[in-house]
Structures are given as C-alpha cells and as structure tokens.
Image (cartoon, rainbow, N blue to C red; front, side, top):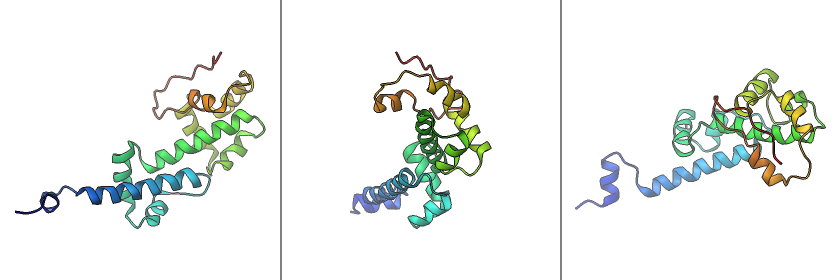
Amino acid sequence: MPSESAQARRDGAPDSAQRLRDLALLRRVRDRIDRDYAQPLNVEALARGVNISAGHLSRQFKAAYGESPYSYLMTRRIERAMALLRRGDLSVTEVCFAVGCSSLGTFSTRFTELVGMAPSRYREQMAHAPAGIASCVEKQVTRPVRNREAPPPRLHLA
C-alpha cells in the first residue's frame, strides 16, 4: 500500500514537508521586504533570492499572505512613510525617497489609496494631533488599510 505522502504527491497535492519548505521560503521573502523596504526591490529580485520564478513567488505569496509581494512591499513603505510624516521634520519628497520609492507621483497615489488622504494633508493633520500617544497605539490606530474604498481615517484619538 502506498504511503500517504506518495499518494498526496500522485494526486497532485504537496506533502506537508514541501509545504513547510515553501512557507519558510515565503517567510524569508517577507522578512527581506520588512528589512530592506527602502532598497530598490522588485518581485524578480525577491524571487532570485530564494531561487524560484517571479510568477511562482507571486502566486505562492498571495496564497499565503493574501496580497502580492509588491502590495506587501508598498504597504510596508507607506507604514514607514506615515511614521516619518508624523515626525514632521521631513518633506513629503524626502519621505518618498527615504522609504524607497523612486516616483513621487506613484508614492502619493499609493499613499492616498491606503491612507485615504494625500501625504501632505496627512502630515498637516498629524502636526495638530495630540502628543503623548504611545507609538504602539499610534501605529495601530493609523495603520493603512489595503482597500481602495477605505474611508478617510478619523483622527480624533482623545
């Protein structure tokens, strides 16, 4: 009688050991994005880093995390941009390049899609936000939502 693993492979389903190896590769990609978000990254470079094709990486990443590697990268960049804009000591252009975006237009478009307002408006509103909020609370309250229909954030934190 064939083993369960051999039966799963014959039926086209990956065995659990292979699934764990695939998840480990995807975690390496996600960790690299988290660590190197400000570097020039693209799906092809990320895929080369784990020796798989860009198409396969995109499909597997989306299946595991619910969004493409590019979307995940842009979400990380926008999260970091939000933190830099809250500080208030950098211009929108400086923040754009500090988080690894090479186009101010693309950065502004993605920021607006995720946050619900333009980066310059966000910076202005955050300049008037109450001080003294713990950074972990602030990060959670202002976390971008990956949804084009996201309502504008309510900044009434008190």
